[in-house]
Image (spheres, rainbow, N blue to C red):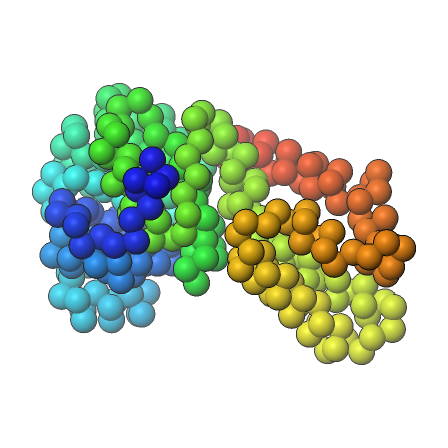
Length: 279
Ligand SMILES: NC(=O)c1ccc[n+]([C@@H]2O[C@H](COP(=O)([O-])OP(=O)(O)OC[C@H]3O[C@@H](n4cnc5c(N)ncnc54)[C@H](OP(=O)(O)O)[C@@H]3O)[C@@H](O)[C@H]2O)c1
């Protein structure tokens, strides 16, 4: 499915899609779809107050921002989770029982969505992440049993506007994905902060420590990106000579109370919080 759906071009697409909420995430998706060749007339947008850059892009493409297609192939829900229920109830009349509902709303469950649209509605629940704003996100997705093969395939293509898509087989794994990739960018930013603080503590001037740490995180991320076939552990080994400086640091970071333990605990807490927010 990943291969089948990994289309980078959406010009083949000829069904209508409604986007509800054209903010940061919804806007990034729409921008991606249009860049990938989706015809503007197929997109209906509902957002009473889109951000200025989005308003401009919609105007340039002649897409009104308060106009939904009736009974579209898919409806993408991209409003804040707090307003999910009210907004879903508002837009429900535009959906048919076959309309695929794709939600990118954190903590909004299949049940929350089917409570509004109906118990047999095809629904896909996803969790993207913020690097999608620069075309480098990753999305985890779960499809309920009413989603057909063709719907899943089309959703994969639409979601690939934000980056690769990983499908999970059980909805509860969306909570774990939320803790890993949804919240994950913050952990990496923290790594840059923490490395800078350690450099300052060891004597570097603040601006130099901050620049060194930041560029290191950026560069290491780029190396990972440019080496898709090499495991992170292999890249780490490649820069670790026996008994060298990196080795000395990794003995701390990979020690009993090191990063694995902290990260496992952090992900477990975030997973639990995601479940709590969804209940
Ligand atoms: N940002 C992330 O990293 C991230 C990651 C994973 C998942 N998500 C999920 O993505 C969803 C959207 O997040 P976001 O960061 O893109 O939020 P956002 O920038 O606030 O976008 C939501 C948009 O919906 C608009 N809106 C408000 N009321 C509406 C209505 N009644 N009908 C249609 N649109 C309405 C908002 O307008 P106003 O600004 O005027 O309210 C805003 O333009 C959230 O559910 C979030 O959980 C976000």
